Image: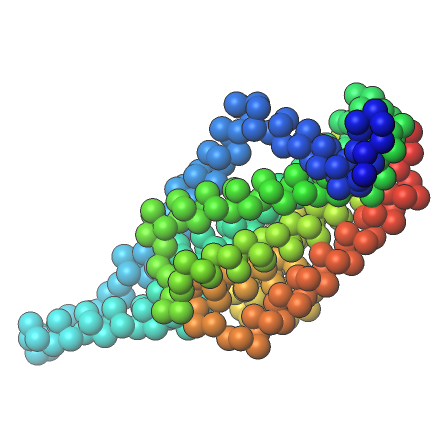
Length: 301
């Protein structure tokens, strides 16, 4: 319904107007747009290929002392094959794939979403300092819409950057599982959407009352490393210390990474995949509800 002056009173109209404003700040800034595209490429090309654990195992064979009598050519070939098979078996047992690059590249998708969500809280601090937040609060737009516009902006950017990361990963040699089909990517983006909503809501809720960028930066630096490294994004959680494993089981990064690896790398376990999406859905619902409630209570001029 529109009033006589032609302005829509629909809450969705206000939500989209604010979300579109956030997106324009991203895609109309060529430097910001290029940097957000280059960042995944740097992580995939440098960090992804440099941390090649499989190459460590294959390029440093065990030195065998001379035998008497010496091994025949056939025995040497058989021994080399045995070592090669052992390396493949170690990689499969540890990472679920024979290529650590494939294992880690899916984890980098979660990494990109995490960092995009962290910076979403910075936007509301800038809006407060520049006076735009006061103007938005003076309009009929609901306070929850102001917060959710930041969340949607972060989620849309996360999905785009996740698509870029996966595109580069496939180009650089990501090895997919037997159950992978292009339709599985829809599940990957659904998982990215849910984790993006949850994480963005958390960081924006933290920034609702903040007036100093330094405070938000301190919070980001405090949370980013525990969330990233206490998850299965870069290393299997079952090989982590016993005191750390309970935290990995409540870390949302663990669940989104596991869901994405099942959809891309592994044989799909329907029961575990359902648990992953149930956790991510509950996480997104609870965090967004908390964020909206805090915005109603604390989002003031």
